[in-house]
Amino acid sequence: MAQNGQYAVGMQHEYRMVVGEADTAAAQCSGSLRVFATPRLVALMEAAAVGLLEDGLAAGQTSVGIRIAVDHTRATPVGDTVRAVAELTAVEERILTFSIVGYDSKGEIGRAEHKRCLVDAARFMGKLEGR
Image (cartoon, rainbow, N blue to C red; front, side, top):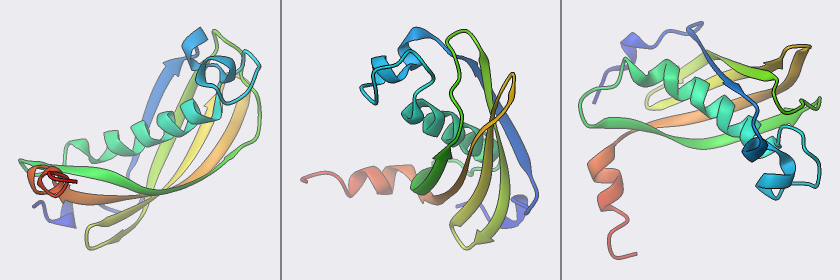
């Protein structure tokens, strides 16, 4: 497993995407409108956190999301670009905490606190066998 020394509080990573029809509340079954869906905002935010960790993982290591608390505060139309900026706010053993802010072309659309746990991928998946 990687040592957490390569992950420093304050590190940031950004992830971007263009909102398509498949990303709407109507398509995601999270509402009836053609606006950026909250489940897709969550995925965007997680992608930013995952991207921050990617280069520091040891061989065979990955991270799994263990908590996310999201406020989705403004609607975004199809065709707009959205982005999430994840900032590492705490490192406690294998648990990493992030503050994440989502934006579209008009400004902030949401905020989250997210926790991820570093795990050995093979061992983690091995625990699922026989379930």
